[in-house]
Image (tube, rainbow, N blue to C red; front, side, top):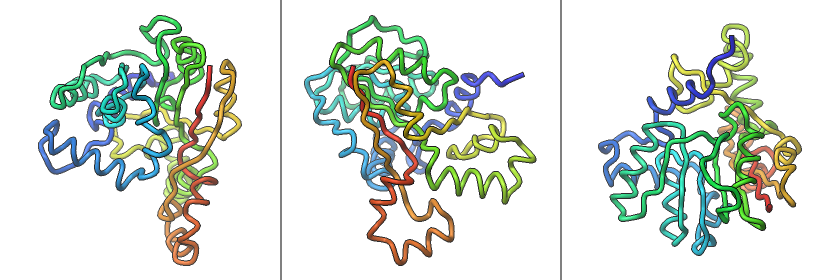
Amino acid sequence: MAPDWKAEAIRQWDENPCGSMPGHAFGSPEFFRDVEVERYENYAPWLKSAVGFAAFGDKSVLEIGFGLGTDYVQFARAGARCFGVDLTPTHVFTARARLRQEGLPVRLVRGDAERLAFRSGTVDAVYSFGVLHHTPGTGVAIDEAHRVLRPGGEAIVALYHRDSAIFWWSCVLNLGVLRGGFWRDGYRKTLARVEYRAQENAIPLVKVYSRRAARRLFHLFASADVSVHHFGFTHAGRLGLLLGRVAGPMQGAFARWIGWYVMIRARK
C-alpha cells in the first residue's frame, strides 16, 4: 500500500520545520533573523531578484506552503495584502508568531494545496516555492492556483528540476547507486533523503520535473515562462569542486542549465 504522502510531509516538517537554523531559541527574533540571512545570503542569494517581492506591494498574494514565513514576510513588508496556506501545524503556529513579532497582519491557515479554501478569482498572485512537488496532486494544486487567481493574475511556482546536478549526482548516482539506496530502500525513499535532515520515520514525497513537464502543468494559463536557478559546484561532488576551480565564473550559466529549481511564472 502506498504511503499517505500528506501525512509523511506533515511528519517530516513538524519534526524539522523548513529552513530551521540551529543556535538561537526556536521562534525568537534572533532565530528568524538567522533563518532569513541563511536563505537570502547563503542558500539562495538569487531568490529576491528572481521573484521580485517588492513589485507586489499593491497586490493580494496567496502563498501556498509558507513554512516559517520567510518569503511571506518579504511580500508583506513590501505592502502586499498576504494570505497563506500550509499543511504542517508547526509551520502555521511558528509563522503566525513571526508575523505578530513584526506587527504584520496574520492571515495564515492550515490547509491543503489541492483544496484551497478561497473563492475563485479573488487574488492577484499565487506564490509557492519548493512545495508542490511534495503533494500527490501537483497538477490539481496548480489548477487550484489558477482558479483562485483573478484574470491577468500571476502564479510563481518553483519545483525541483529533474535535469539538475543535484538530482543526477546527489540523488541518483550518490544516494541511489553508490550508496545502494535504490536496492535497499527503493526509489521514493531514496529520493526523500534529499530533504534537509530527513527523519528515518518520515518519507516525504519528492518529485522532479523537466522544463517541458513543468510547463505542461500550467496548461490552463494563458502563458508560462520557465527558468532554472540554483547551482553550486558542490552539487556535483568532488568532480564539481575540481570543475569550480577552472569554471568558477561560469556558475551562473550552469545555474540556468542544471540548477535545482525550475521556476514557472504564469499568467491567467
